[in-house]
Image (cartoon, rainbow, N blue to C red; front, top):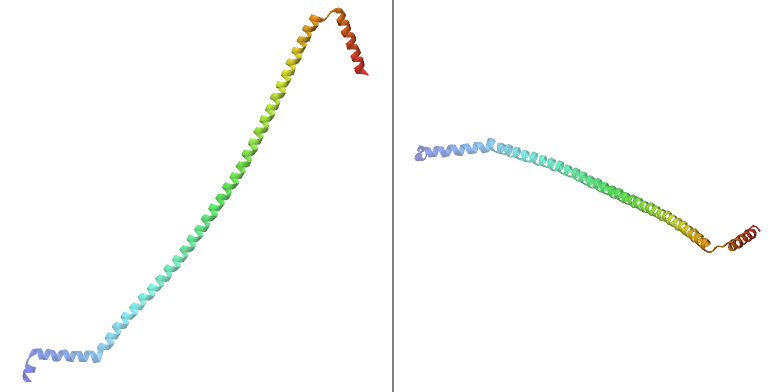
Length: 164
């Protein structure tokens, strides 16, 4: 055994064993427990922080989804209103166009009627003028003195008949 104690590596071994025993008995378990507890608390805090961040993110997501839904509903309302306005304008435009067409048609009918009356009047005037001219020619050619007195007496008789 003397050789055991004379060897420096033996002393190193004994010192190491004593160090381990003292470390295990006195402070090692509490130090290890404290280190592990610290790491556990650190991990718990990180998990709590992560949960809070996740809840905040879910809250923001829900809020933005509500905003998107609200914006979509608003856009749909605006589109529906625009369609309604367009339909109203279309209906109004159709009515105005129909009224314009009716007025234009009525004016055209009135113009045609006036033109027709004017044309008939001119034709009648022409007929009367031609009839007078022809009557004058016939009277000039065929009327003698005896015929004219007969014609005058017949005219007087007809006037007397009309008076009665």
